[in-house]
Image 1 (cartoon, rainbow, N blue to C red):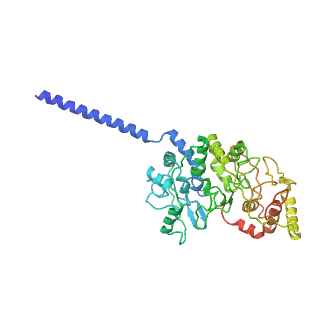
Image 2: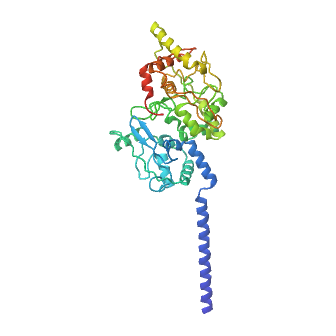
Image 3: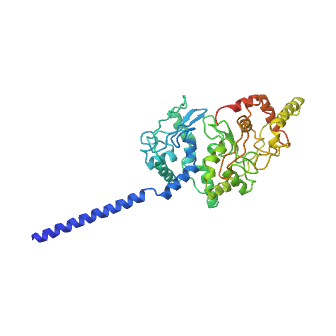
Length: 422
């Protein structure tokens, strides 16, 4: 009997040990499967580049992803948070679910409603799988302990009931739904433009409470920057429906093309994000942008009557042009291909809103430095060399020479163009 009980006990011990080993193996396999791989981290890093998270969550001269960048708007100053995995000042205590709720629903880890300065209105279209990859990558970067200032939002915009009402009226939650009538490539481009790339966060006019006033991508002044983001639905602004596909790809990837050069905030987007996109994604984006219908309308612009005063005003602008601009941009505004953009028949010159041209002349025009264009030619700033009146005159001349047609610019426009924002 004693032998039987000993054998039975040994058998039980063996079963217990074997069971523990099986559980250990299963646990190890599960942990290994749940842990991000080198490939998934690379995918997450790529998606983070596509979303240009670095651009917003890094202060000028600051540590990458540690936040602190200030976004000045008509509703106050927003400060981007630290999204490194620091447990006290970053998102080190966040779970993947917390991150998903922020991206998809615009809610912080503690349930607070986020301000739409964080573009969750676009990020809500990102798939859960992509959000998970981004989160895993952000959790893998070095943790940075950095406490950033709080938002400076005055009343009534700091009101929680007002933000709740804004979300009810203007925030539509939901992942991007593919259009079955379009190709897989087109849908990929739409997903990137509408969601992860959040292009309409800039290229859409806003109403008095910061909500989209018109259709997405219809153009508008940027909320956090004193620049005008032109309409992607108008061939008279930034629409590319009549461009060759390769020209669109070239502009997106390098920042320059025979049609246009990227400048201002768009140059920053190309430098920080678009140049790193895969050829397949850039092409998909180009396919989608090219497919947008042309909704160009005649803007209600007061074109200058060629009175004697107007002629004298433009003549003064011509003198400024001949002295400071002609050597590069040519006697008839023809420019130099691949180096100095043409000004004749240049829609950036004749935009209904002359803000971008004013800012380029004031602060200089610099295409982005990219792998495909590592040494771009730029234009120096003229705000220290020319008076506001001269800047207004030369812009008015450029907008009405060589077949161009645009409204006159005044010294008030130039002063407003200085403004704030990059």
